[in-house]
Amino acid sequence: MPATTATLSARQAVAGGLLFIGLLLQISGFTDIAVPSPLVSVTLWLSVILLWQDIPRRTRWQAGCLSGIGVGLLLVARFHYGADIRWSTMLDGNTFVVTMLIGVSFVGLIGNRSSSARPLGRPIMGARGIASTWLGVHLLGTILNLSTVFMIGDRLARQGPLSMPQYLALNRGLSSAALWSPFFASMGVVITLVPGMKFPVVLAFGMPLALCAGLLTLLELTHRFDLDETAGFSLSPHSLLMPVSMASLVMLFHYGLTPELTIVSIITFLLPLAALASNLPRGPRWTLRRIRQHTMVRLPGMRGEVSLFLCAGLLTEGLASFIAAATGSDWQLFARFGALEGVLSFLAIVASAVMGLHPIIGVSVLASMLELDGSGQTLFACVALASWAVGTSVGPLSGINLSLQGRYGVSGAQLMKHNMLYASAMSVLTVVAISALAAWL
Image (cartoon, rainbow, N blue to C red; front, side):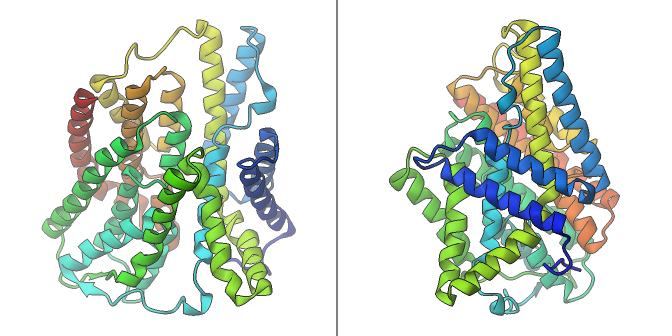
């Protein structure tokens, strides 16, 4: 049953408030107001400490290992190799990504709650329904992220228990959006790690692969399952209005109004601002009530992803410091990052995802062991996004698969089994795309 402000403990409410304060502090840093970066990270980490006991055990174990290894490597670098560690900023890793995720969550406040029961589109059956479900999750998910899966999945569940083809369409529709969406955590991580990447090239790489993911899903599910009685989600022009508008606003700010800010920074402040503007016509009291409800209920619910991203950032800080101290900053995993190196990196990250590690771990560790130039940054970005998209579709502990298991009771092992062929085919396509991109760059 969804939590309400009445069912939340004071500890959870305080943690939600801290996440909101962290977002405000990060946004303040985009202005002339001087906000020390450690203040943002400390606020976010305090919220994780308060919510630690509520985090699912598997995620807690993984996050604890990441942070423990990161701290251990920092201590070895400092006391064994005598490295100069900036302890004041050791917690800053991935704070940009976490505050972006918090900002994106406010998109759920756009629109009136009273209209939430309005149908998003009548279900359609068969292969057309599966194709429409994939497309709906993919397009709406570029802005709404994981909440789109619940929004569309709950709508489909009204027709009866969800079937495996519907689960797979929901899974693949969202995970493949990581290939190109500027609103995804994957893009936020990549932009933070390689700020010199060329975003138009990344789009040209990711969008055709995403289209291939959709076509592959349709062909495979049509061949493997009888879809005659399988209901699908029907998109309407109205449902596309908000994500298209948000994407247009982000591009307007990025290329016109605030070109000095990264896309991650723009998304961080723009989506909460849009949510605020959409609610103000109902009055200040209505707006404050909705913001309070979101802060106290929705933000503490992000504890798993917030903890994982922060702990992965700490691991990256520790690993980078350790490698620099142990090698004198001269050692790199690859002397150059080309086609072969990109393919090997992609396969390694996907393989680690199958074994239960979130792709952010592989991507962050890889980035800490590379020194990338301009074209190398763009190639790395494409490799990271592709491994994230494929890895989260098949990984048993990815956010999308854990969410489907928790929300609808589907077996994680079954999801992984049914996605193996898809992941293999997407890996072949991605290897070809990486090789072609490396030759072109």
